[in-house]
Length: 168
Image (cartoon, rainbow, N blue to C red; front, side, top):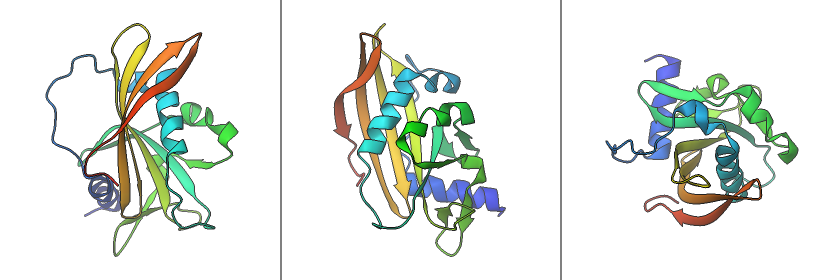
């Protein structure tokens, strides 16, 4: 198994992928995930991350869409730059490393575990509303949120959050 396949397998396990939904109603192409709604969903996810390993430096990486055997789609560097005001260290997901024996996803520079942030799904439900599913993983911990977002006065915000069953 190549290192990249091992990384994808570890990410799949970490996120505990749910059963596939064959309906594509309202689903946007991944390029559209890098929008104000996608940014708002990920900012909300970041604000809800648990404090794991206090005092240890953290890195973060953003993935768009599904993570499966065929791979993953890292967010563009331009989209990731939108989060610069958070003063967090972001890495392109293609640069992450898988470290044996337990397939921990790490920052290649520090060899410390990295938070993988996933914007799994984004659907526009009206001219001003969206539904999103987000997820995070860190070592063997993970969580998922379903979100409803709304745009008012040019600002997109989360108006409803639901924790997905089975996620921590």
